[in-house]
Image (cartoon, rainbow, N blue to C red):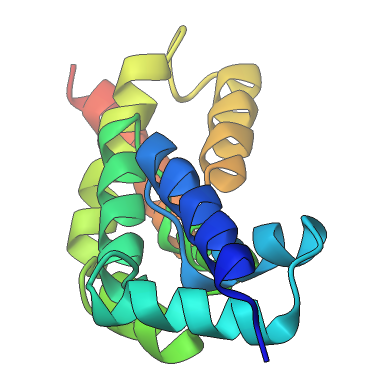
Amino acid sequence: MPTRHGEEAAREKCLRLLGLRPRSAAELRERLRSAGFSADIIDSVVSGLAEAKLVDDEDFARSWVASRQFSGGTGRQKLRWELRRKGVSNEIIQRVVDQGIDEEMELRHAMALAQSRLRGGASEPKARARLQRLLLSRGFEHATVDAVLRQMSEQEEDL
């Protein structure tokens, strides 16, 4: 049977962590586990926080996606990977990322990032390769990267 003192300490630790930034239930469980709390205490505390709506993986995922999009653009592929690492279920990831960011929106984000980072013309091989690496490293899919590079080359030809 978990001790009341242990639950209070675990709850306080979770609240401190949540005060720093939103976290997934899996992140909180892992932090409590590494701090030496028992499985019973962890389950009780995280369940209680979820019931109180202080921990909600879907809200966490939406917040994470919004912040990553705002901070300079991150592609759907990388967002999926990051959320999996945070312990968010595939069902929630699918709902938040795949349904929340369509191909057109991702293309706009990738294009805006590319235009903000472009040094020299997109038709120059080195600039094109650098831009391609940047977009792929940000988690944009190959088809999106190809479309951005094609659009930028077309824009240069029109000038």
